[in-house]
Amino acid sequence: MMFGFGRGIANLMPLGLIGGICMLIFIALIVVVIVLGVRRGRRDGHMWHENHMHSTSGAEEILKQRLAKGEIDEATYENLMKKIRG
Image (tube, rainbow, N blue to C red; front, side, top):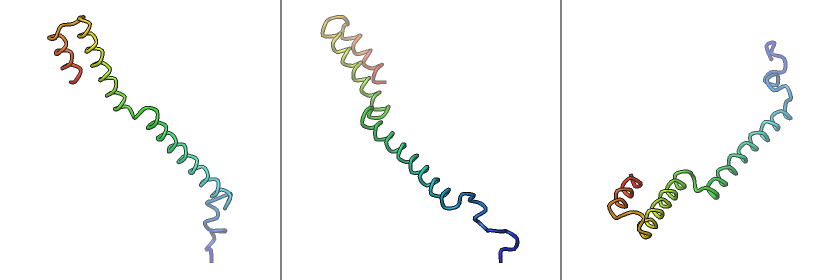
């Protein structure tokens, strides 16, 4: 007996099985987009904090070059290295 609920739970899914399949396909597409985005982020950018670390070492390299060229003295070099390394 349905007690006046007609088709039962089928009323909640107007398209029935087709609607459920479409919903699963949609969710699968969202998961694929997220997975590909994460993989691409790891391959291309090594994530943000690693890029930040590389830029810091780039700044250290520039300071080393400036010291080698004689543009700055050792005291200035040490002071700037302390600021870069935090």
